Length: 431
Image (cartoon, rainbow, N blue to C red; front, side):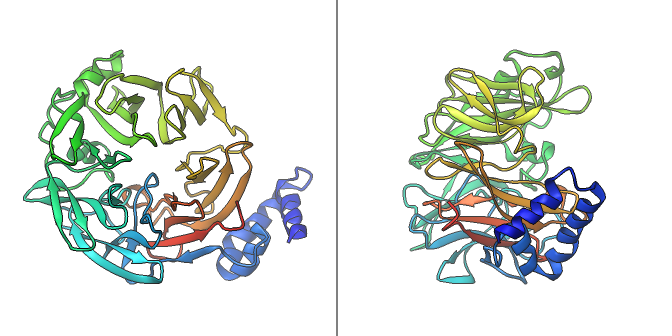
């Protein structure tokens, strides 16, 4: 295996080999061997006899979990949450329902249905997730009931349900509170992340003072506005922020719940998005702009102070993965020569490894990898066929890799077999 790996690196990486030869070799790998000789492909590409990726679900139905910042595993590691959909070739419409359920690790490919939702999308599902207060029994998901978006707390053991006055975007780590936003507005301005069906009640207002981020008490069910769009639009206002529409996306709570981070987005006079990256305390206090470079993408909290984010660096230094310290305001580029494109990054439970993926490359392949935080060492986990002519835009299927609780396995969504399914990757022996 090591000899094959050295040969591959020599052919592809060494500049002394003519580009035409290395390109043909790469085409042979990605266009032919990947599909016709997977055994040989994995042996050449990774020095492994076979793929370490195991299907959790199969056709004819389509299965997926959603976003990368949550884990689908129960605390026991025995149950894996999932959505089941009857189609895979278009965006959800108002009356389209997705099934909510789980797989048991002892019975893969057996979907156990619990409920249905009419508030979902292909990127983040219905915000399906475990209740931190009962992580082997209760789940949360969003739904649309009587023309209103709501969050539902459902018990697997007895079927008991509780409904809340707002849908959930993110949960606090202790399960005491949740954070919400206007999913109708989000669907208008970022299709594929909001939900179809309910009109935006403040659609005509560019920067409403009664819309923004809401904190919801999950014991009492009461919610309150903690950050308004008007407040954000009037904070260090630039000319392009005036007389335009503002919205919020990507709320994420820090590991211990002491802060939340989020995107403030608006459309400038050139009809282009501009993004500011903010954080604040859970009650909205200590509002602070982390990055104001206009271009911010996926991120994850390392701890209560540091965030790793793909963004345009301050000082016009290009776009990279950046370490951002929310207390000191310091930024630092991470793995500049190794990680050169955007990906869904997340930290392992012990915070020593970073799980990351890519968008489709010239061969329509998405890559999945582990990156060691201490020295940026990369361990390639797999390549997954994802043709953009079939799955892109709202219906694309990002891998959205997610950790299990002990850092020994990863779950992804993928369409490399022709349908949208979930897969488990065993990390034992790799890290």
